[in-house]
Image (tube, rainbow, N blue to C red; front, side):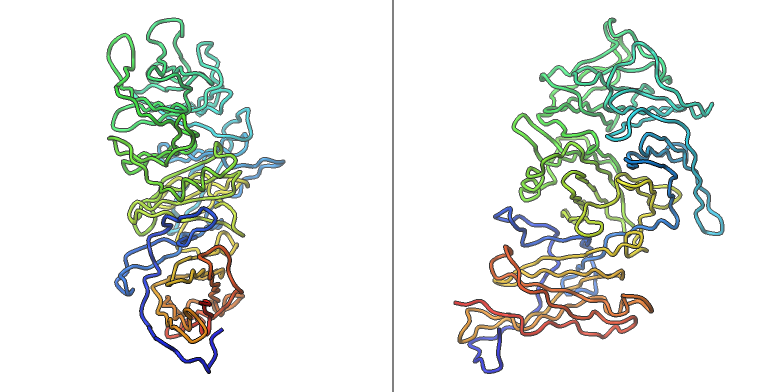
Length: 495
């Protein structure tokens, strides 16, 4: 440690850009010397480098719903918006959610409209002008909004084990499970399907021997995702309702739950014959990877990624985010299209984020809990996850030191930059004497455990593989905007 008797050989005190750009590439997979958790980068004219780390949104159940479902496997599976109403699949129950604005407050009501046969797993949902169709890998169901009737599809021509569904040209399109075949319904009617023995009533993936995983539409085209390849099809007026457009994409999809489309961009977790690939994005042209080697190595280390779920949303300051959750691996990641950066998301004590699916309704952001029957509002107005403190963390490098910052309190946390004093000393190769962090100070609460919010710091001297003891300093009680958060006498590296 630094002592008062040391003679300094050199001295430097300067501002450091500790904001960075999310998670950068690391040479080794054991650690990441630039990781951001539950924070994201924004432009900020008040910061030294004109950027800052802002907190990700929290969750509130106050303007949400707690569904009355008993037993186990109360999993929030899907959300779907259609004609200003929300449809939610929780466990094996399908709910209709409606809302209204009363004196500026959102009032939500919900009711069960039907049941499906499975309790877990991905559910595909799509709609035409008057019907909503659901498939769960076993059967298919139709909800007719004009008659408010919910029924299982019993047409003998309907395929078995359908894993996903989409609509194009006013037809529902779904697959024969564990095959390369896709089927389509009559126009405007998901209860009527054509005899698969007649030419043109189905279409197979033909470019490569493959199995259909999921679907999406983009710019008037149908994308059929196989396990190892993806094909484009478009509607025709001939005897065959859809025709393939070449060439195909030499990358398939790991799971239909990773396919997400919004704001003109389509994203999915890809797969090839050589294994898990990149997270790809396209606006209609050749798909490009948005994941880097570090994240791809991390995802490849997960034992099961087929249960991954994803969604796209635009947060309250206008950033478009792709969120992907891995339940078995207990991990969540978020890509910011505006900053071109990845961030880690967590809920609770380093667990995957609670949100399993998302919908924008009545000018509010809502998400479905992946393990409990709850619908939350997602907003930067909330600084915790429905009462659970959010761990916000930033790992960055100062010269030879790797620094980990953590903030657990249920209060706002905005990081602007840092000023550090680094010296050389007689008995040390390099010494980190002092770090002053520039934050949005004075963010404590009037009562409770967060009157004096705490910032925690740990230092690694071996490049981020191991860390020393945790140090702590206050951020400042509520209104104390001039409070200084300074760590001193931190330590040094031996020659």
